[in-house]
Length: 171
Image (cartoon, rainbow, N blue to C red; front, top):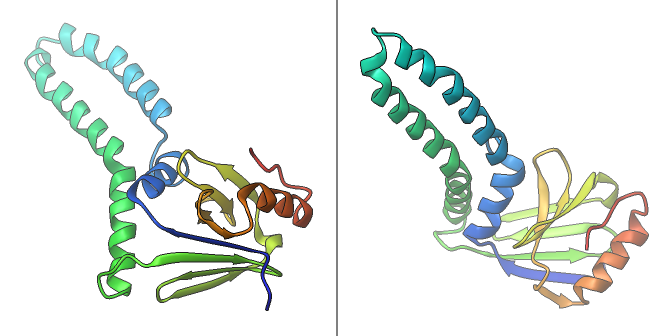
């Protein structure tokens, strides 16, 4: 089968962590900051006013800080686990991702071969390090805008607009 576009790249930690932070793992950072600020606003005065808990204030603040740190490192953990799993499947080597776009989208990443039909794409996301063709709420086909070996990124976006005129294609 002939294809019109080819995209080749090696998945990086930055690509996966950015996707995890924005769309895939745990609460979003602004929401988390608002939650902890409200929690601290309500809890700290209660702890300070209560003689029985006044001594536990440093401990409570430490626990809050540790939980916030854990949440902030979740996207990096997601990226690390994802890359680790891919390497395990491919003899401890990070394989090159090869995407071809023709009648269908073909993804080849070492031992993994996936075919996706264009009708399965529910939305398109532009991230700092990648471009995502989402096929579900938390799943998608990632591509590198600078990784086109056949065709260009601008031509690909136009091709995608032709295939799926109902989708918003970000610049």
